[in-house]
Length: 343
Ligand code: SF4
Image 1 (cartoon, protein in one colour):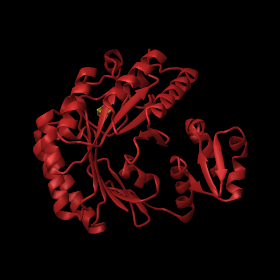
Image 2: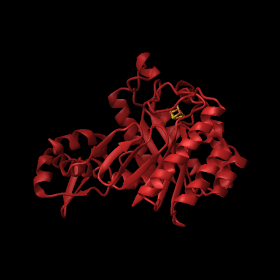
Image 3: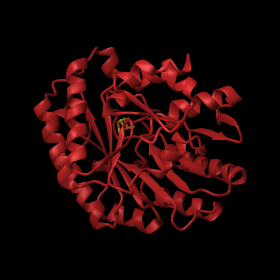
Image 4: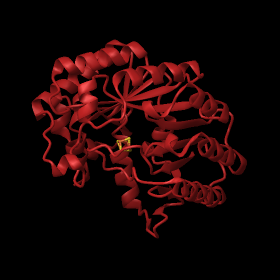
């Protein structure tokens, strides 16, 4: 399966914890330049891989480029790629950057899935995160998206935030469940090098509290019928992110736009001239690294399973019928487990 990723590197305001390639300083000329550049990248991509079964616009905040550029790009993609009728076409949106009219035009242009950067439904947490929206904006945007016809909406939810308590997490999840998103991406705050939070030495929740929050969220989402299908992702039955599953299963994808990366024909590359051939050893390691992120796990021989016997014995992983998978607690320490397999 082949996917297209379109990176739009602009945001209304740079969040102080964000390490993504995005800028909050731009003018119309730069937006036009990037618009043309993405189209050129798409044209190259269509020669390399003409079929796109999933298309994902991420960033940054794609709606920042305006509705005519956004719909122009998806229309262009439809002209030059073979995009099947049932393709998943996702766009990341910030609640404050869309309204009903905007969302309706997105839907009419062909987007059929949204990934909404809700992050929290607590105004104080959103203020600390430097988000441009408040809880009311998030609820309004979600409801307007449903009204505009989006029946596949993912919401991002963050936890382990500065000053956040377990009660606040519980309230966030409860409010999010009232919206009944089809999919939830869950992330603990990570203080990344090069961000304002890093420079300011901002403290997130301590390790034990963070783990207690994770367990609470897992429990609440499971009770509400969500499937924990990947380390950081939950969905209602049948609403997995097909685009991301393609990444985790080692499928090909072509990136378009500044800051995007591609993987095709056995190479990783981007538009800065970086190109690396993936060796057989790399491919095997990536299959383990990415495949164990999924609840379905990977096919593995007994030798591989033996390497993590201590985790299997302690309930962090399971090995049955030649399949190795991580449990809910295993997801929490997945980096350590995968590291032990790869040594
Ligand atoms: S909206 Fe998203 S991409 Fe933009 S600065 Fe904030 S976290 Fe980063």
